[in-house]
Length: 220
Image (cartoon, rainbow, N blue to C red):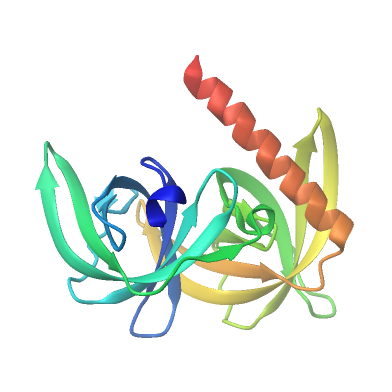
């Protein structure tokens, strides 16, 4: 039963695929459980802009419950607005499939890092990490990359008040153009490749420590 797995306020991750087959993920949350297949969720917002989901279209969704991550597909039934809050009514099309939470949990963040193409004599570039998980990251940069490009990421993370430097290989899964204050940038979704288990655990440890720190900060 979905009501035993999903709770009000749970974070969700909605995947939108555009006409060029690029994948874009948007963060939202569960507002109401209507029945075992129908939910009321907050309409995604990015950069202060509403991201409307098309009525009748199908999307992928991840639920971040207290203990696990669950994936499913859904169809948009309706969109509306109530008390100045935009929401979307969705109908789940598949049963919830449980996934190992630690690897896939995403941390929204703003972290500077360096990267370069996995080529001889490639130049290092600076970028910004916008979200991070044990499986990959979403970044923005002024440098143009292509889908399937292989890159090396230099990550500098602080765990237990100690700085940890990691060099991790990644593969570009999606690429999108962005314009930020008239400045052209690119957004990429990168999946880690051949990552060492110890390095992955270091990243996951950092994510959960940072998540706890942010929660404590928000309570103050």
